[in-house]
Length: 362
Image 1 (cartoon, rainbow, N blue to C red):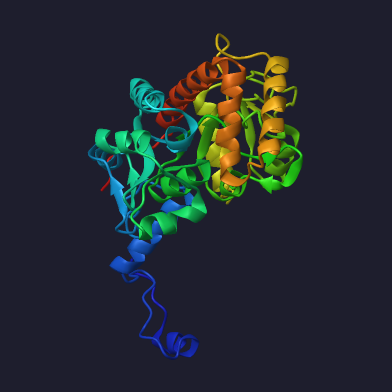
Image 2: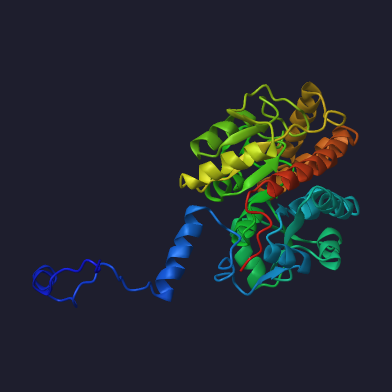
């Protein structure tokens, strides 16, 4: 049976400016149309680690060989911050912690991508000498989202905060990030809000943490996260952890009990068109966690000392954490190190649970 064809008179009447119509033989799509269609499919599936993800990366991005290979082979990647290295812990504890977190990520099926700025380069994955530079040399810039431009232009080095790491990791196509605790709304100063919160609202990663730092106003921080449409998911818990303490007494709105459940929730969230992070909160390990009332007394005293000394801005959090460590005779430091390793382990498991892991890039 011949192919159905419109008569030339009917075709010229309906489409006067076209060539004769042949419904059975449409023209093949152009290479450009195929590329656009593939690009839109990738967007609809939230494919961040694809062959086109490097197209718009600036020249000041630098990938370690381990991370570059993982990207090519589509191995699971976990971003790690460096503000804890440059501003959170003393040397050499900070260098040992960074190496231990990377080892935990590798041991649980993923590749660590420690993020930092080294001499004006945004490094995704740090070599040993670069990590030692950030850990040992002073002073270092503390790099949040607003600080990248100055650090890059001036060739400076620094540790990236939660907000800074989120930005760099997302540009690099990484979907999972492990940290200790996020910033939030400060106690007695509701106008003082960490840049971490708007970054979480605008960056689609799974962020694994032990809640917000206990020096903060936790109820106000949770309220702000709700306003910003950031899902807060308790991992095998119904209680929002308070960083050093396993419980804050504040309920979490969502719960997940496996890495696959976390990934399913995150993918559905992003496929709805949401660009916010999914905040996965994990209680610190029971053997090192501190009692809530004990921590509260130490935090209250540290806050009073900060007010008396007029400490403000980016210096507040490092001062408070240092004073809390002294007031707890090192127990808070032990809890901090333990929860960071615990979060790195879980982040690796979540990264490995994404269904497209292991498919090589074209």
